[in-house]
Length: 482
Image (tube, rainbow, N blue to C red):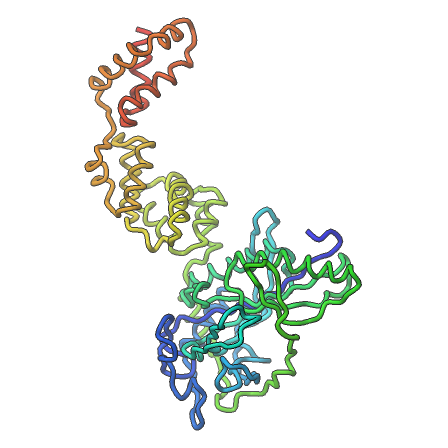
């Protein structure tokens, strides 16, 4: 991508935890409420208030750490990260600095068209989220902003990667893996469009073989895989152009303009000392009991990688198909529910990967919004096996099920799609087809056996696709050779 340069990418992924209440107060943790309606003196940082730690938030970060192969700290504490910004009413954020809950994790990713690679996780720490700013126009040009403090105090985990990522494809694969794992264990809904999962993206380039990394820039609060991928294609090229023109990269924070496809400087990058971290005086350190960690570990579900391997080895479906299906927990659950009623995992996988994904993408919906049940899909596949409907008609039935939520029996009955498998009924239709296509019959008799495909097609057309194609082929050969 950059000839003689290597890209190095580090990702700081923020995921809001799906607790009922905020991290240090009893305010509702909910997206979409009227602005500034889920606030209280504690999350607004009014004088005389004290935070109280939400135990469920600690449970969830430990759960995330275990799922991402981290070491869990037995002793942890909170710190104040001091900075002034309009979305932070206290002018400091309660976060973690030197003693986070989770360290030294890793995930294995398989980027598209690249080798499998292991990405290290430096740490996962717990903190409170800031508010949400709505700018009057473009962020770089806006002369005013509105702030909603509902999000202030939402429990947030920050997952910090090692600088092990060296391509946009690896970055996206890593982000998708994190999203999948967090959804599987039920600690975050990871709705990127709602900001509950977002990433700060650090990018640098250096000549291949260099002993040191290049100066990095940081793209803040990105919440779209597509935008992150585009930014990771653009920003290294920009840095290369600066370096090769004799300039130098300035360490700083950038924003991504999706319309122009360019990065825009916002401010120079702060270092840790700029935030004047010090231990949070209003919260005692947290001692994590080994037994509690063991109990949390016992609640972990089968994770995506293990589930994928089981699908390949036990259900004998292709690794790629298994990877796509297991990446989404609801998709995998739906798949298994179909297989429970229809014992041909490969056939189910083919439909999930084909017609199912096509319609989901066209309608831009998730599998949780599908109107029919796994049992309906199993029934439709069984109807194909029984000869009730043909594979071609099955696509029509499936599309109607998808659109209306009706079960396959109802669709077939209402639309008159039942396959014609009555030999006597088909014989009459086939005789008419042969009479109307005498030249094709003559070609067959002259040795051109391939013409039977044309005659099968004519029969299927005459029956509007409802004839049993195997039976049509059989009757045609008997009549042509009789």
